[in-house]
Length: 297
Ligand code: HSE
Image 1: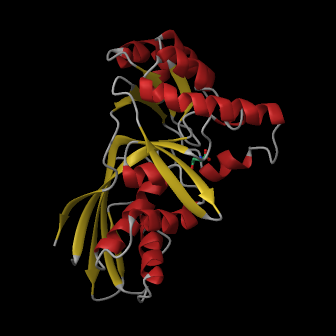
Image 2: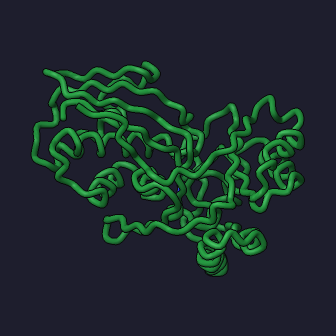
Image 3: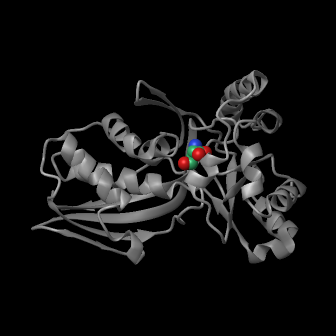
């Protein structure tokens, strides 16, 4: 195979208490075409500032070549069309990395498993919570053991709907991680472990009361909300419109409401009122496939 076009989903990470572990793939996509060339690097379809060797998809692609013992300077052309907004907490970086590792593997005989590709991409990302659902689709829980990610896919009730509310300002993951404490009170750790455990069962069953109780966090959201202007008002609008739960998507600044009401987004938009000038409400379906090949030749 000399050329491959991939579709890679957006992802939301943490889901409240599952910091750096839980992730979910969503129906918003980047499409990336990778083609082997005679030499050099050519990138199109993204802002000028990203058209260089530091592009995450290129770094991931070359990490696979290195792993396979192949020359990393092999020529590459990358063309992309992005629906996933950058620095908004919807897994744009993970999508680039997932695309890069999957493409490099496919264009070199597909010797590596998804598990191995996840491990390679995870070295670049630092945590597997967005990468795992980007690669596998659906709801995933991951851990890292001696540097190697391990992931399980989990059932998710088809009644649940995720409604993203995306602001018109970015927030870098670096900045959002910098505000986190180095240590937390023992009681907060117990709170998160117990809530994450119950949440997984509740999401599988689609039990609104259990989800409402379990989808709470003390490890990251309390420290991050002040980085997201409008957080309190958007949360009040979501709860006023009847959301089952409300969370920061990944490191933010996108926020996410969880509902089982097909008409929730309409009421949510109305409740947001003037905030709609800066926040886009986007109902998203769950993506169950992860990275998929659109075409290859
Ligand atoms: N788990 C990560 C965080 C996701 O919350 O910082 C964003 O990369």
